[in-house]
Length: 95
Image (tube, rainbow, N blue to C red):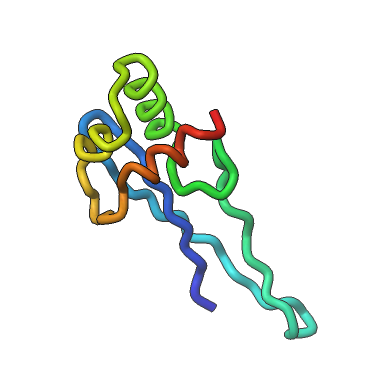
């Protein structure tokens, strides 16, 4: 079975990178169930943003008073066209 891939976006220095985690899949002995390895731990459940990117968004928004739309424009795309104001707000909201 092909592994399942979960993605996470992380900010390193001046780059936004995408980290893909391959999670192994296995079929149970009876053959009727598929078991998938758990994903890596997250800072915020069900988000695809890493701790470095979340820290950057919170720091720039709170310390520098930068609005989310300008913060989203300042981040490189890294192949992600929908990284915008909503994504910035979702990344910092639970904190």
